[in-house]
Amino acid sequence: MKLPRFQPTIKHLEEPFVDVGQGIAVPEPKMGWTLLGPLGNKPSGYEINIGLIGDSESLEKTKDFISRWNVTTYGKDESFLHVNFPGLEKLNIKFNVKSTAEIDEKELKQLDNTSSFSERVEISARIIKDKIKALMDRDPQPNVLVLAYPKKIDHYCIDGAIGKRGSITKTSLEKYIERMRAKHVTLDHFFGTPPPPKKYNAVDLRSIVKAICMQHNIPVQIIRPQTTEPYNPEKPRREDDATTFWNLVVAMFYKSNNIPWQVRGLMQDTCYIGISFFRDRGDSAMVRTALAQMFSLDTEGYVLKGNKATTDENNAAHISKNDATSLIQQAIDVYKRNRNGQPPSRIVIHKTSRFDDGEQAGFAEGSKDVHRVDLVAFGERDIKLMRWGTNPPIRGTMVRLPDNSVLLYTSGYIPYLDVYPGPRVPSPLEILEHHGQTSIETICKEILALTKLNWNNAKFCTKAPITIGFARRVGSILREMPPDIDIKDEVGTKFKFYM
Image 1: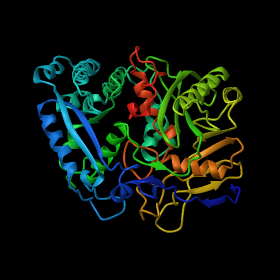
Image 2: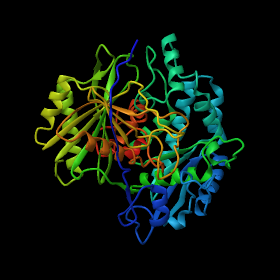
Image 3: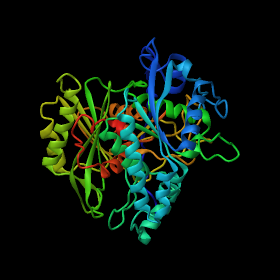
């Protein structure tokens, strides 16, 4: 059979820069921090107080681990990908372990008295909850918590989790799809969850801890035992020390109510919203709940929980017209609350499935007082481009197909780093449809910029834009949310509590 030939339109979009220091634009956040410090770079510096939780061993190792951030740590090679960590003094940042809460051996022995995974998670969560409360009752309160998992909790509730998360079973089709996912990096890896079992009965300690901390209005950084062990290039269980230090320092700096950098390429007075879906606890496989993650140029991210969604014949999730109206109005209210009552002049909505007529009408109704609205639907057909030579397509490559869909390489060869930082052939994001007056090129430039707005680590970029890239993590925390937490309140909407 002769395949049809077509001539795609290909264009390369310039790499968006980020502002660090006193508003100086650089292409790479880590090199920018090394030279100029975080955005704003206060002359007085940044002093961040830590509340540390763990058993005697993990407390000691984590204190030593944090002390190693004070000196220069070299990357594992001299490439631009592995930037040396310059030490906290160079960055004008100081982390102080001001208070600790120790988990004693008697408490940990409770985990030996049951073989049930869910009971072990519940016991661990109860122990950790008591320690969090103890730290938050002290004066002064810490800026951020660090939970250093004791080895026993890590073994029983993290390493021992596989195959023990409730009554999870997989069909032969689900097993086949998992094998395919293991072979190919796809959007599902970033946006969604694997095909679910008949019922969701799992419990996730990390998500429970995040939800507990939200009750106390304190963000948390979780550190596993292997993270504090010295890096061994012969047996790499994690990234090299310099990369690990970069990621943790940036994440904890952000969680302590600071902005690490600001990305260029986003429009002023524009609200960027990602609509994705997650499966709530106990719901059947086909029922999902809508989730909105919103960002703007100069404010931190926020999370909004919507209502139940339905799926069409293609298993694509949709919300009703009324729910679309309500969700967009919630987002506008949060935006106005953080802008002295000023509404956005433009809204961009990213969605992980196509927009149906009801959603389009609902979003239009909810944003009728906004000057411009763009709707962008993502999908994936496993289309890949090949390039002459040894390097994959360049990050920023934009391809327009004859059906007006667009491929955008947010991962790929990065000229600034002179490397492709990935293990497999990169696959592009696919923009299935766009409704709005903004040019598709501008839409793609904004997507590229939003891949550099992940303040949970110090990476050059992520594959998915921040608007939809963390749907799985955020959804898992919402599943564990206690009933007395209102996701619409000031605490429950802040993105940093989910990271």
